[in-house]
Structure formats: C-alpha cells, structure tokens
Image (tube, rainbow, N blue to C red; front, side):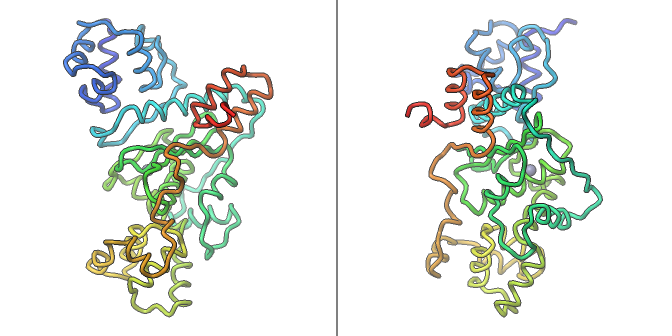
Amino acid sequence: MTETIGDRLKLLRKSHHFTQKQIAKYLDFQQGQIAKLENNQRKLKVSSLEKLCQLYNCDEEYITSGIKDETKHNIAFRSNVENLNLDTIANMNKIIRNIEFLADKTESLTNNNEEFDEDYLELYEKAAICRKLWKIDEYTPIDIFRVVLEKINNVTICFFETEDNLSGSSIKTKNQNIIFINSRHPLGRQRFTLAHEIYHLKYDDEFINCDIDHKNDEIEKKADIFASSLLMSNGALYNFEIENNITEWTLDDVIQAEQYFQISHRAMLRRLKTLGKISERTAEEFSPDIMYNAELRGYDLKLYQPYSEDKNMILGNYIKLVNKTYENDLISESKMNELLIDGFYDNLVYN
Ligand SMILES: [Zn+2]
C-alpha cells in the first residue's frame, strides 16, 4: 500500500497527539475539512502546507512526497496537549529552526559543549556538582538566569507567552541549548522552570522535552527535585533555620526564606513538606494570598510577578549567532533582519 499525503498528515497529527479540532483552528478551517484532507478528498493549499511544516518542523517534501530529513527536531509533548494553541508550537519551532540554521552556518566557528557523565549520582548531588562547576557555594542564593546565560555554552532562553499549564520546554540540537519559558508565569516559577530545564539539557538523552501538567512522570519528578536542590540545597535550608532560630516554621519564616532563595511560594511549601518541616495542613493554610501576605510584610513583589514586561523576548546565544553569521558574510542583510524580527529584536531592525 502506498502512503498518501493524507496518510502522512494523519500520522504527523497523531504522533504529536493533536486533535483534528486543533489543526482546524490552527489552519482556520472547519473541522470536517481536516478529515477530508486526511482522506485525500481535499487538496492541500500551499499556504496550509507551509503552516503545517512550521508546526511539525518538517520539509514540504516530507508531506508532499514522503522524503524525510532525519536531522530535524521539533517540540513534542509528553501529554495533555488538547488545550494548547498550536501557533505557540509553530513559533517555538521557528526559533529552533533559526538556531539550527545559524548553528550550521557557524559550525566551524563554534565551541563544542561539555559532556556530562554523572548518571550514578543522586539528584541533590547532581545539583551540588552543578553549583560547583559554576563556582557558586552551597549556601548562596543563585541568580539562575544570569548564571545560566553566563556558564552554559551556546544557550538561548526564549520567553514566550503561552497557556498557563505549560511552564517551559527545552531542546538540545546541533550543540545549541534552547530553553523556552512561559513569560506569563511569575518570576519564582520561571526560575524553577529554568532550573528544571537545566536538568533535561544536562541529563536527559532525549532531544526534546516539554512539560504540561506532568505530575506522574518519573523524569519530570526528577527534574523537579533537581531544580529545587539547585535553587536551595538542604544544607542552605538548615543553615537558614539556624541563623533565624526557626524551630517551627511560621508563614513569616516561609516568606522570608522564599524571598531569600528567590524560590516560588509553591515550591517553598512543597520542599518544606517533603522534608517533613511542615504538615500537609500547614502547607495548605500557608498557601493562599501570597502577594498580599508578602506585601503586608514589606517585601518586594517581584518574585511573584513575571521576569520581564515583554511577553516575547530572547536572551543569550540567538543574537550572538545572528551577528556572527552576518559578520562572517554567511547571510545577507535581509536574512539577518528576518532572523532578528523572528527573535523579537524588531528595535534593532527599525532603529
Ligand atoms: Zn520537564
């Protein structure tokens, strides 16, 4: 049996766990039209073909004639994608594609990444080694965004406005580390997500990771424990207790600690609960109205608000790659401008 265009469209959709309804919304079609496309009862327009290639990060030749480029990666999700806006995924793929394109262009000019082999270590030990590598002692609060941009080679952090249940995702491709962070989430949560994605980039063999409501996934749990230890080691927490004479944690102490370590209220409560320092009930009691409670105690509310006012923003290697590629005459000026606009650097193009 020969595979048809419709077969491949269906295969792509199913392998990404998308529904016909989502694809219809993404292409601005009636739902019934998607079934027709997949049954070859309707022809695929060029504009739809382009959009689908953006969504699946594949070449047009794959959809039209089944020729596959195995080197291409895209954002795939472990679970629960029904509510996701597919434009978000298409946009993420565009950034990945741009970075892959730039990495190919600058291949001979770029450093290689270090490889890690620490599989035998406990999660908290992995976090401790990470800190050591970055020359940050066990007790100091960690400025994770700055540290990641400074210490990890070829890293790009993309802030994207997306659905609430998606915290972030990451991909390692062509020696580039690409991390997506939901720009709508508060800083404390974004910091946690970043630390979580570092785990994937360093210790996961899979190329692609993405997290949505991941409560029951083993790898996700590991990444969470790693993130929590990286931002706040057990030693640092015990130290904090001693310095502040804490025998029984009050809400005052919790907020003081989360402000000190710059860790989200939820992550702080979860950690204390895990260590048996507060009960399930106390955690629930301390949970609500954190903005109000922090303000009442005279704290800066930045931790509970997004990192940046910009909904979409890219930090790190992306812009460096664009500049390097252009300066070495590997792309035209118009291509450079296109890449800058894709990366939300409009101001550099129009000023
Ligand atoms: Zn994850």
